[in-house]
Image (cartoon, rainbow over all chains, first blue to last red; front, side, top):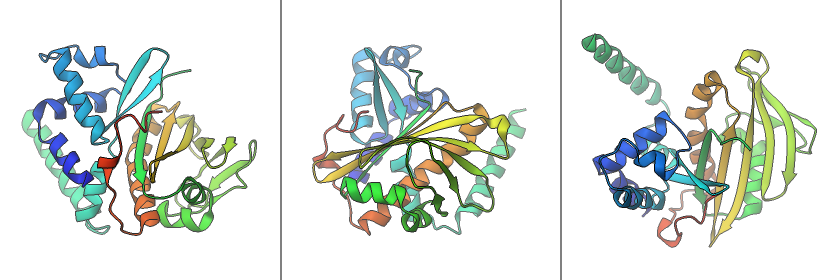
Length: 107
Length: 147
């Protein structure tokens, strides 16, 4: 089941951190992803491979460089499996409320 | 060539021709996009989303059935958002199809608008074409889909 790979890939803080980086900035190289990380290059490569196998990260070759992108499509597939079309708006509203309250607390 | 802004991929158990038809046929578009796209899909011709709530339209740049379709994407009532470019790439991988959508040349305002939409559109297209059949990703190797 492809969902198993997605959940397994997401069940690790370092891999989630790599995805966070790719949300903030798309199309990063391996070198850029290694920067500012305590992980070794080898560890980053290993985590990226797992994320690619789960189709959560896709790569595009540009010249000699390999650029990494977050592919949120499998997460959306999981989202669609359990969240109905009509619940979406209410859940978005709840999420926005939570974010707004969090920002207020942080002030 | 500038660096693409967004790259989305999905594996669909289908054939390249069926995926191509889903991308270019009104009946299919209505089901996964929500609205049909009016166009003859020939290079140089315009296309337009028949959506009463948004003025999305553009020009067809490249047509290579059933592998590649490139068109511009703009909101005609919001010229400040600029004109972006969408590329569909269809590749056969084993008994499935890897569909890649690359959306680039995006302004910041447009990026916020499209980044929610594509994952939903692709997931819907997949369920439509597979009619509920599960997909075994284990059979696919990493990098098969790499653009």
